[in-house]
Length: 226
Ligand code: AP5
Image (cartoon, rainbow, N blue to C red; front, side, top):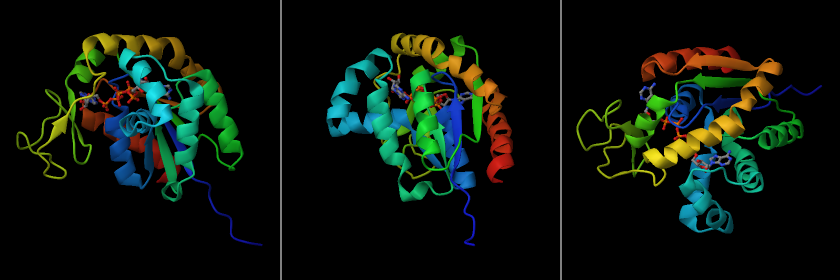
């Protein structure tokens, strides 16, 4: 009999814009050798590359709405098959609708995988606008910063790669952030009950500072891939 191999673990980070999904996913990726799959990043790359999917997604993203399930699923399915995902993936910003959650179940069933853990990042709405509006990233390595909550050690220089070029997202303004919060509550928050019913939901207080949230999240992930 051949040796049994463990299928790649699947973690989902659920939370509204500004909850800290991207910030925490990058730290989990580094610590546990997992791969962060952010549908927001994949869609922004498609927009920048001018692909057909990117052209269709652009206006929706700028308005703070949700891109159609078909487009998102096609982009994610492609990326999940890549060789670097062997140890496991952290889905950041996916699924966001009931249709996406069901499609994910089907996709995982076909590869012998399952959703191992869903971490719901619990926050209040109002402070999320300030978190999103103050966000910027290194243009070279993508490290995330914030005007108030996470500044580089040396002003204007990325802690991680030494880059000096930074950028802000087109949808990071108070008006669009409000629309994104509404989309979260209407279409994504119901997934909390969906995953709670499946017995895989963990809740983390994501109003705490970044390091405290990191410790809580890493403890949960360690239970699966420690
Ligand atoms: P996406 O890129 O996924 O954006 P989002 O969900 O709105 O999430 P954010 O990236 O804004 O927030 P985050 O939780 O990652 O926060 P971060 O860690 O950066 O999606 C963008 C768009 O793409 C969507 O609107 C939609 O149009 C489309 N899309 C994407 N996925 C889709 C899907 N599956 N289906 C359909 N459409 C889809 O933190 C924010 C800031 O706060 C940072 O500056 C950070 O330094 C700071 N911060 C983080 N944690 C803390 C803390 N604990 N205390 C203080 N500051 C903190």
